[in-house]
Image (tube, rainbow, N blue to C red):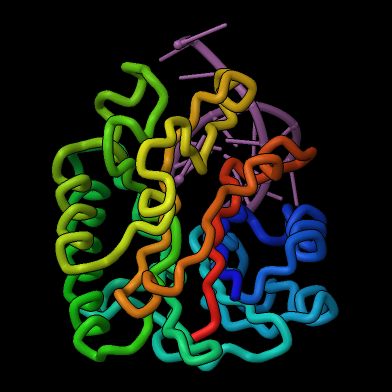
Length: 259
DNA sequence: ATGTCGAGCAAAGCTCGA
């Protein structure tokens, strides 16, 4: 079973790239972020024709998350991250597919820091921590997949000072990510590639960062223990980032052994 | 490496978010 996460950066703008990738890689489940589309604008028919059921939470212009499942409709369990009824940003959806609870999350970027956006980022991560603990307590197999907008460690970014003041690399967000791992989640990419350098999932459009491989690791799949035991392979479909009209992120995927 | 990209607003270029 192959589960992927992909910050698509506007699903309609990127639809040809997405459909080509779905056809080539045939993931069983795809967590998408940054749809930048309302529910009405979601390309339902194209996704259905590609053979995928879909659950999504859209928003005009910004954010938006979805879960696609090949041949079935995801069974939705959450359409927002619990903990703040006033938060109306479309950043979290969760569904059951083939016995696994799968979340597609788009954590706040948090720039500039300090400031209200940074405070929102940290508060959102605290809410994620609380909900993640509830999910673990359920003892179900769970995958928390998405764009965490956090570079977990210094080796997860190219050598630079450009991001020194960026919210993505600050100690507090890094501590928030580490706190998730401390709950018992497995960072899938690091689990099977503990020493590999240049494990990037995002390359900014600016400053020639893709040709220079000046990347960051922002997109993560966190696995509960039952899922971690089934982990067979994990990778980044890096070539996708080099396509015409590409998103600034590349897909990350895991392959799970049957139960 | 002070730069890319696209959307919104509103009618073209500026501003915003990432």
